[in-house]
Image (tube, rainbow, N blue to C red; front, side, top):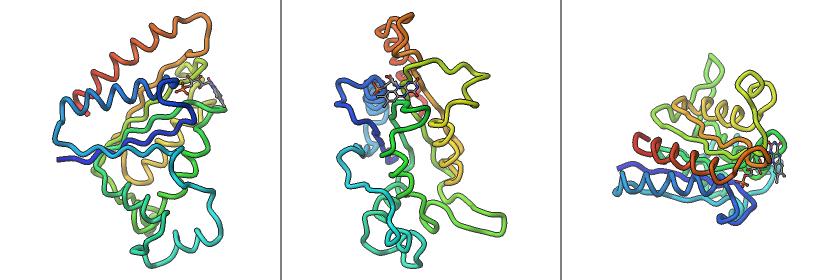
Length: 199
Ligand SMILES: Cc1cc2nc3c(=O)[nH]c(=O)nc-3n(C[C@H](O)[C@H](O)[C@H](O)COP(=O)(O)O)c2cc1C
């Protein structure tokens, strides 16, 4: 039995969000396929996540990783999961700030990664992740990596943790009048259903 952590980073209500429609569908199909797996949903807009303070830094870099503290609790919850589904919209070429703040909470040496002679070593290498993202515009292959800083940032942070089995499902052109949003959504849902079979 696996534990899947479903991380939702959106200010909108679920019913109004393209990325959550896709990720909810992915989760539904995943559950059908893996009924015994445990799914934990973390809706970041409902969580008490703040910007890091100087006191928080002492907790993150302190030796005692068994303390009962929100930052260490999020990091430990993250480390206990086997699979991750992230759902986020593109905001200003990156991710909503609450997701960045959450990532600052879970980057904890001794829990998700550690320092060694080479630099850093991920502690979660046998896990896998999918990032599901909706974007208003289009970011073609040759331009995407130069401009886009959301998915590429999450991918690099997950690589820091050792999670290199990382895939992205994105819907692009959600706000482009050239495209029919319903058709784009339908295509993304079909893609999500296919990927859920093997995740
Ligand atoms: C604050 C904000 C910033 C945005 N910045 C971008 C952007 O930089 N590039 C882009 O293509 N779309 C941008 N968008 C559009 C969203 O990415 C797009 O509407 C997406 O489909 C929203 O997904 P959601 O319905 O799951 O929230 C932005 C939207 C908002 C609300």
